Image (tube, rainbow, N blue to C red):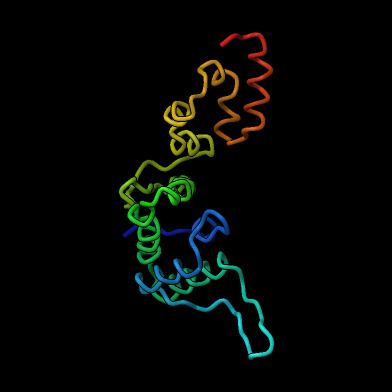
Length: 186
């Protein structure tokens, strides 16, 4: 159905979906694995009643589940199905989940654009023109005009800080804006 993912792309997707703060919880990931009929290979943790042995982190665990799926079924279909289910907008309707969704949405799209795919606002993956550079990915994903408008960034600031803003280097954005606009009266 969709294009194959190389090891680095698959790892990047797992890093995003299972991120400690901005990703999904292990139980959420496990539930989606079940829905997609992807085997849970276990994380290596164990307990004998007296001691507990920690397993791999959830990013590595998810990667191992995906790698096992690809190896056993020789297909990437369930991996893409997993991404669509994980990024279903219905799961993020609560206001407190919106920022998490936006972060994951942008980061997943950064990886997918290098493959020639994109995740739409409807949570579905579709083909698109393949990105060739990080700058192109930033330009296509960040929707800069809307973000600057939403944050009420003064138009003069964008003249001096656009590259730092695209890199999300907000310290340099503020620093450069202060230097360049020191004599500018708002």
